Length: 418
Image (cartoon, rainbow, N blue to C red; front, side):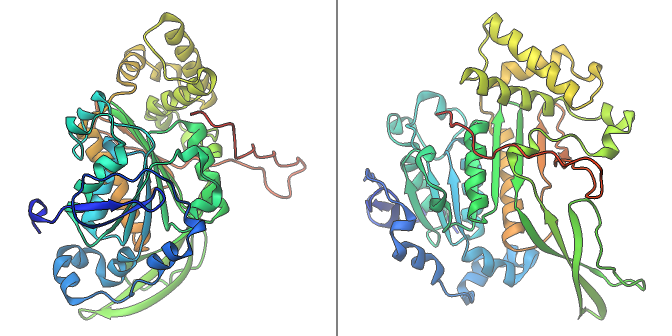
């Protein structure tokens, strides 16, 4: 496929979420649409044929060899919402569209500014002052005209929970914790899987809340039968089956992962096996502490830290408190790391967004295809060290037969920060 020779497309203004049709790509939609108010939009997505065509098999031959026809069929009918079209979302959109998802809605209410030109590749200086999602749409469409592309320019904080119901996957990028938590809560009300991700220069994260997700792992069957039992506090084996392949008996093990919402994961302790081992605590990235401190700083001040002395002092105090809450050794929160993190806040680096965008897109593809173990539940990336550890952060409740009452969970929806 040669993206450079694909026909340009034009967003047709349909009350704000624009779908692509053949024509000149210079037009921009200006009004807004709510999916729940337009049943025909939902049926347009759900009525797609399930069987994959011969030419699609030829087009996606390499990836079908990796994850199979059934996974590709699930992918080609998937309807994905991608929120905030900055450099990270550019990478996610590129990977999902080239993989052949059925429908992608790119959502952003902000306009292109000079700073956006540094790491984003769907826009140019001619787009300055135009909406980010609308400006990126023609270039996304060029990558794979088979994908149905829509644009939404309404403020995401104005969306009601039912807005998210038609989507099979919601991905929110580069937003503050309050907004992410509210979107996450809306997704839970609609029983929709949710990803959050963001980058700050050399640093970034991916958070996943798939609520309850089943996936299949294939392996050669052993002589010992596979028990239907819990493997961890969040993962259990729920079913098994077998098939013959190349003269071998292959066992297909269905596992189920249970997730926590972002608002609870952000205040949850590290897993017990890490907290009880000093060696493992020394290996925990201080980036976890700094991300929690950054979100707390934003909730207090409504902005990210600047280089003012008062901001640096407050951030350092918050980071020290978060580090203690995680029961981590004080020596792992080094001043040089704090300085480096603060210097990177708010910036975008193409290699980091490429790595995280690729990781997130691959996890989304695996989840939609119900293959392989997904991220559980918080991946951190330190570009300085080229490390990406994953931490399973969940609330810890005492046993049901405990003499103490279980703690009450914090409310899911907080006040939005624009």
